Amino acid sequence: MSNTFRTKKRVEFGDTDMAGIAHFSNFFRYMEIAETDFLHARGLSVSGVFNGLKIGFPRVAVACDFMRPARFEDVLDIDVTIEEIGRKSIRYRFNFSRDGKELAVGRITAVCCRTTADHGMESMEIPEDMRRRLEGK
Amino acid sequence: MSNTFRTKKRVEFGDTDMAGIAHFSNFFRYMEIAETDFLHARGLSVSGVFNGLKIGFPRVAVACDFMRPARFEDVLDIDVTIEEIGRKSIRYRFNFSRDGKELAVGRITAVCCRTTADHGMESMEIPEDMRRRLEGK
Amino acid sequence: MSNTFRTKKRVEFGDTDMAGIAHFSNFFRYMEIAETDFLHARGLSVSGVFNGLKIGFPRVAVACDFMRPARFEDVLDIDVTIEEIGRKSIRYRFNFSRDGKELAVGRITAVCCRTTADHGMESMEIPEDMRRRLEGK
Amino acid sequence: MSNTFRTKKRVEFGDTDMAGIAHFSNFFRYMEIAETDFLHARGLSVSGVFNGLKIGFPRVAVACDFMRPARFEDVLDIDVTIEEIGRKSIRYRFNFSRDGKELAVGRITAVCCRTTADHGMESMEIPEDMRRRLEGK
Image 1 (cartoon, one colour):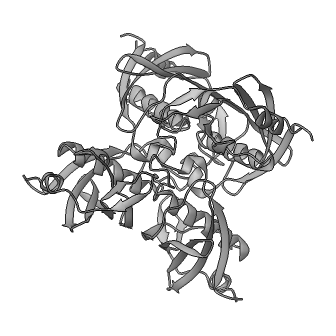
Image 2 (spheres, rainbow over the protein chains, first blue to last red; image 1 turned 120 degrees about the vertical axis):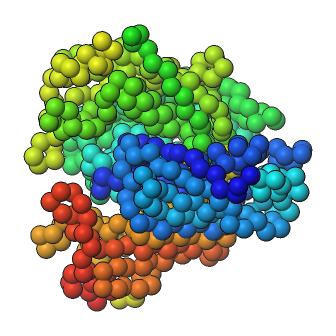
Image 3 (spheres, each protein chain N blue to C red; image 1 turned 90 degrees about the vertical axis):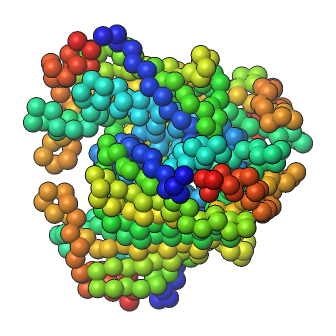
């Protein structure tokens, strides 16, 4: 299985701003939606119980470069690639395009955490079988 | 103390849509922000621990009528009124205006609930001292 | 063609709030997305050029009643029904359900407007061929 | 006048997610709100008419690093600094803290553009008097 996964996202009316384009903050929402699609395709979830542990992936670093605007009713292609899996963290890259033209490139680095009894988060190693699924093996 | 409370909210760039006005869904966010301001002014919170119970106010009915649009950088006056306090529920009215001109009238009906051990919600009577604070007594 | 149209919407992580459920304001975004799906299915758009006129549908009244919460990764069924088409306005009803259980019922009343030269909006009669498409004829 | 400007932003209920913290995408909305506060303090606006030209600042690169989560009702201090003003672009840094503890550091690079007749955007040099105001001179 290739490490790249493609999904699609339509720009909604409520995503636009008075400049007539998708507000830049929505690209981060689109990335997260694409991440959910990706995880589902690999039998995982961004937030759920895995082998009895309540695991989440809080974000520690995110970024996006914008080349071209996206407009209402555009259907964006989003290519999800895992750029790096560390012991406890994962870095995704998201390539946004429309009709083959590049619109934006985003990145999210997230850390594997278990929820503690007092609703806190504690980083942990990515479980081995989760890692294998993430890597598409 | 009067039953009406006034607060202000600026329309942000990210709140606008491609029609150049505040997207209608944001009026519900503004209502919730005004509710938080109101509750703070009365020593309460929309979600928190009250007399040892974890209490929240999930919404059961909301509505908004729109008379005039709001635009980027407008500072809206929001008048918060409690229209009715029942045994377990409360209905707020929110009057939005700018320079004395009415923009919108919204309503939120919320039910007092305690969080149960399994993260569910169970309706309960509004505690007597919370009710007194809500009524501004 | 029946007057009811069904579409689906997944609850995203960013749609949830600290109560662990989809924030109520997002149901209005879901309604608008369902409206866009509905209009596309009938060859129309919520904002676009129709017979040479730039036409939009600003909302004048919206409401939602909530029966059960929606949670992350829930896929909601949304049934879109036109409750009434007036000369210049249209009222939609949106029935939200999951696995056949009713979650919420929302309504949006929108007015047909043309954009004027100075970026204002002016109400107008719904064009006859647009009306026929809306009615599914 | 110093090049750093401090403003405040409260975390609203609707900004939180099911992890009980402010959803990361909202930090970009907070940055934009802080930018608006900053521009107002210098007699400017993020989108408006300046010397007869309709000028906007579309974003070309944004990023945020997260150190600690922000929670409902937290009042965040946001320090806005201009890291660089180029001929046509400007890079802001936003330092988020609460009670002196650093929560996040964000950056936005925006390009000065005029709106063209067909609603497009065309980059242009930052007008000299706008530059002086941005620099706090």
